[in-house]
Length: 334
Image (cartoon, rainbow, N blue to C red; front, side):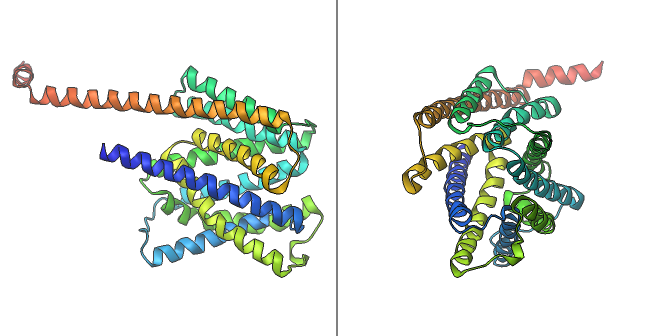
């Protein structure tokens, strides 16, 4: 009960931190990019990761967590892949309509389910698959409007989906395989992510905006919002690794769609963004899917825990039964 209760509390805390920090950074970045004209998303993400690494280095220095080196090739490959996936998602948004970009994000869940089923042997029940379908339908209704296709944009979207899925699956598997915490993995991989985006960011942003990030007019207001964005990003990056490590890549994507619904709602309430009955209906359908997914995951988790406890009890009973031990001993004589 103690371990289970601690895990549940830790998971709820990670999920809450992820939602609050992600919605906050979206609102902050929307003000920065839409109102102040700073549209250099990839370069900004590299600064986020650099600030995250520096913050974790300070945390390590004051001994808030322990450094645990492990396979450097795995860390480097993982960090670079994460950086590439972020860059490809930004390119996908730049070369596609907003509606097609939203479809790209929706495709991440089924792709993750396929990869985990095909290569990791993970099983998703029909009920879980149904709840995910309801969720995706709701988010699709709420967010997907125009669907303009082009070859380059479609290729970029496909690459973004594949790299994002693999990176998020690796976030979970690396933590389990090498027995490292989310903080330890983020600390070691963030420099590679930051370097990948710092090198490619100005080029990609220039391609998408036809502006030079280094020639931008950095007013005090812009600098304040950049600082806020970087500080919030520490919490976003930390909670991302924490949620994926504690739950699964699919659960993290479900949480991401919850954030989308919240951002739409806050955008309407705080920023007076346009909002229609279609948005409201889509959000309600998505919430039904999320609630159903959460309920089914809880039920299936409890069932697995009961089955594991029953198996452990069976093993203990077999080991403590003298008759079984005597028969086992007699069996060895033949």
